[in-house]
Length: 442
Image 1: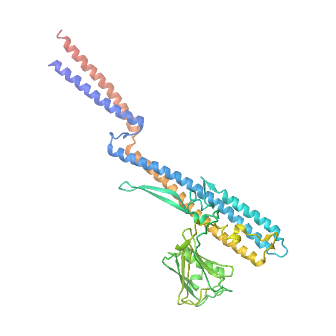
Image 2: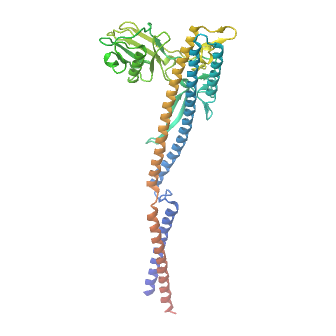
Image 3: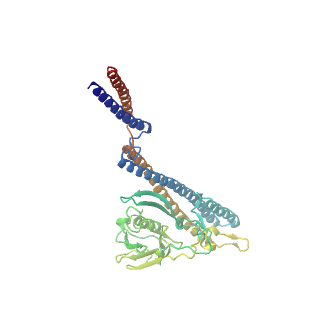
């Protein structure tokens, strides 16, 4: 009977020691790895979720890298654009100087040629990661794309399907030079008033010019020019200047629901009011402008009497879609302007004025390129910040699921080591007692 009891005590001590050793192994692993779930056998559900989130974080890391490269490309193009704008402003100044009596236009032509060479060099060197968005060759299909896409987001829906979002930059809208001379560029839609504006316009009493404006066959917006809408935009309601009129129209377009960012008003060289589509997608046959004067209009802004309408559409690009902002137009292109030729001499004042208007128009278009690149940069940087935040949130999620409490596990480890020592001693005592009992029968 005594032998049976001592054997039972030994077996109990051995079982206790095994249990403590198993707990000790588990706790030691948690302390050494820092994780309470390091394998599927620890907790299958938590391990599966954590593995999926880790995979998503790796994908988000790749998205973050893509955004970094995209930001660099936009920065490079934007810096090139700002440099070209400065050069265009200098060119305009030189052309205006050439209008002065007695100026040697051959000397001015030398300066203009240097500016043209510098602009081309700036555009050609605006390269980031092998991409140039300012100087392209649209005939090279292996390199050129009308739209460059920067991967900006990654998501996984409830079915497990992967979705990517992108920030798209239209190279059709950013190219300043295009080496492809075999094609023609898609044009914007542009409608020009039939009558030029002369002097000032009177909106002080009952004067009103209300019209609807629609872009690209979309929903029309109503533009209302009267003493109420112009009160804060002009200096004198009885003598609204032509430029104040254009600024007021553009302000209302910018605040409109459907035409904002799609149409821009300006004046041509004859002081006629022009509406033109803007933005990378607003070219070709899809580009369209519809202007319809309201029946109540009493002030003629150049588009005729009340209820008059005007419509314009863009033209499609020919094969290759060649031509950039600065090199399209043949001899009249900004990149090809010459006010003096050794064989024919200096150009006339009228031709020179036309060149000044061409450079002014180019400044407006290149400025629009800078605006769109700046907007893309803001979008990319904002998305990059969001992705970084999302990765940190995912790290915290993984930590919540699988990370061990090191302080708690370390304390538990010490306790288990003490229990193991006691269990070894208990087993030793039980074995000794059994041997003592057996010795009595010898």
